[in-house]
Image 1 (cartoon, each protein chain N blue to C red):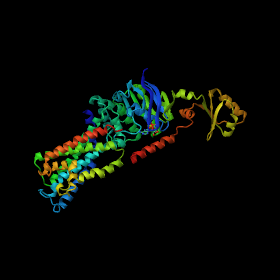
Image 2 (tube, chains in turn cyan, red):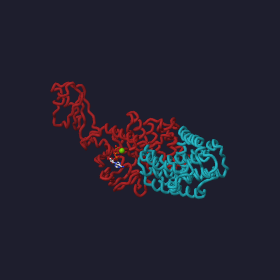
Image 3 (spheres, rainbow over the protein chains, first blue to last red):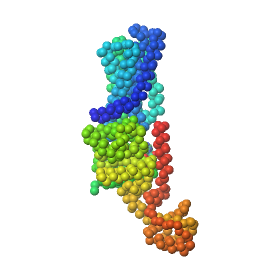
Image 4 (cartoon, rainbow over the protein chains, first blue to last red):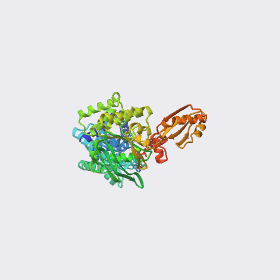
Length: 248
Length: 328
Ligand SMILES: Nc1ncnc2c1ncn2[C@@H]1O[C@H](COP(=O)(O)OP(=O)(O)OP(=O)(O)O)[C@@H](O)[C@H]1O
Ligand SMILES: [Mg+2]
């Protein structure tokens, strides 16, 4: 436990130290929310979904930012390898599992905090104050997205040797996961042939779960959302731990 | 004295390359032991195996009496290591880097804080402890890494090229720290280097490693004595005259440099007056004459026919920096 805490603590120290980076990564989704939300409010038709497009977008933007931060925190392992710091951790008398869980908890917390930094202002902009239980439901989904995608990032980083591979993964894996998740549009308005893809996208269930919490409406049953998101977490942590065992 | 380290037929292959080739030796407790060799000799590979970071292809070793294959965690707990490449988190302060290490080795908070305080004082970084490591110079980083490696009170400290790329003055400073550590704390220190002077000045014993093989192992003094000769340096306005006059059977080798002639002679002190007499007979003027002992560079040269050159060091360093930037 103390090892996991040590690594978590390091992540937190790095997080609070990167204030300018935090502001940068908070502003981008908020601007997107404003431009897309107000700009497309009257253009986008949302069949069978109540409320404005802006309110619809809030969970999507928060989930996006949690996911990108989480993947980035997982891939931090690759930077640590590049800058030599990983060796310091690997040569200590600690198990790989502890290191992996430490990085997962640190990354997930970072992603969660980053998500809060967007969620709160976004709710104010959207004048959309959810009820308290709903708000907590959203927080739970943020944690699940954070844990699942940090572990996902660690799994990816364990299989890569340098950052060039990461760029490819960003373009061909992470962006599609975001694009297909229904963060930007209702999944029901997609062409039928894409629908199966959205349903195998783990982020879809996170976004829909948050949407249920914040707006009270979702296109996927919230219990399915929680089951899939939780299952995704468990699967990525197990796979991530397995792949990380072999890192050199 | 018991052996701090016992290495037997240790071998490591990388595909077809034999990076470490069947090496065996013991290191005594409290020794400063140097592993001296050119780039690619297998120094880092050897340390990696001893630190249980890399599995040997064959052979075995015990560190503090603990088998590296059977109980890697036990070995890890009993050693400290400073890697060839920097391994600090630059976004954290010196103190936070130290604290992280202390936590990883499960040292209780009170003890941890006290040791960190002592060690930062030892390496004179007490005033800078709350500064981010990215604001530190190369020498400060190295000192911090050495201090960090000592938090858990290891009985053996591995230093992989501790002064690579540092200024001569900083290097001297670090040598003093290392010597003090061994003397005052009784820590066994194993360092790798390709600086001859470092091995000579600092180490009780040196193993010369080349192409994965140990080609000599002894005290620096014995290694140099084994060459048999001393170096006599003669300065004169007439260097060819000096060289021509001293074609004697007891002169082992003659080299002419910019403004001096260097000759190798066994027991040179007994020949000084003879040399002066011969040069006077040949009417060759002498500006100065001095006797010096051979260096480890001369030892390496005589064993391999090659020199360990400083350019070597610079080129790997550039490579390393390049690798870091391009990510290869
Ligand atoms: N992971 C690896 N994969 C393949 N070859 C390797 C690996 N690590 C080391 N080698 C090779 O093994 C040989 C010994 O390398 P090593 O790093 O031990 O040398 P060294 O003595 O530490 O040299 P330097 O002074 O440059 O640090 C070199 O030829 C190197 O290319
Ligand atoms: Mg090396």
